[in-house]
Image (cartoon, rainbow, N blue to C red; front, side):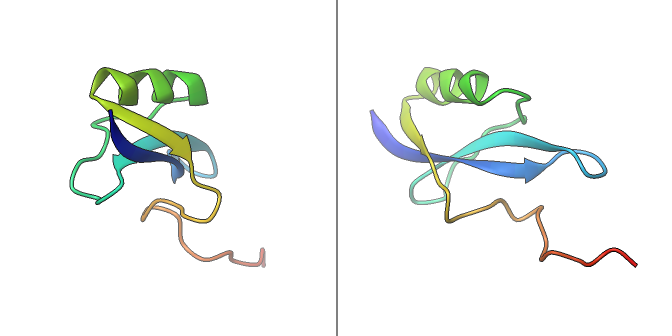
Length: 68
């Protein structure tokens, strides 16, 4: 299996979902998943041994904004 990573991505509003991408960033999941293990299963179906990345987030997540 090829190396990959699983990360959080903004879904809608303030909700988040899981996505995976290859370690080199050239391939990413086509959809997001509500559950981590569904995302992991999809990554494995595509040949990736994805691990959770606690240091990286998806491009959809911006910096923390203080509520006004």
